[in-house]
Image: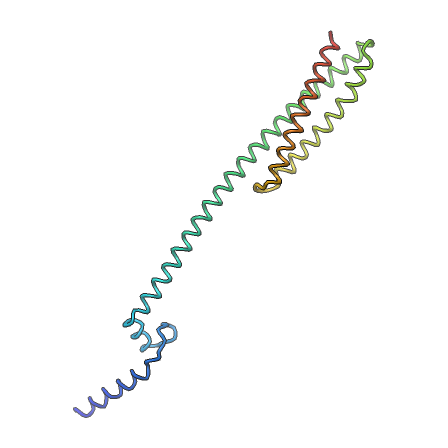
Length: 181
């Protein structure tokens, strides 16, 4: 029996020496590759490398989630600003309509101030038109997506227009009060 054990050992040694160039990739190396991968630590290194990549991917995912939350918060704030501007425009439109009614009543009763009444009559529809345009611009701005500097600039311009229209409305309102006296 000793010669068969010797031959077996010799065959195993020959077989293992032929496997010296065996890959440590478990998909390619077979049994000898698996033994080599376990004994050299190549499998552990592959596992560690993949765990490191997974940790990096999780960190990137966390950063992206934080950025998405920040963008959602910014979007909500901008939506609130647009809603507040819309409310201001609606109030101004109601005030303009009331002013228009006052102008109508003044024109019927005040012949002495015809020129001022004509000025008021021409200016009130113009303000109404500008207010409607401002409302339309606010509608367009609301659908513009998440913040960019161009949208912020446009919003600031619309707020300035609204303030200008409000000042002109106040002036016309004072004018109509003067006519009523």
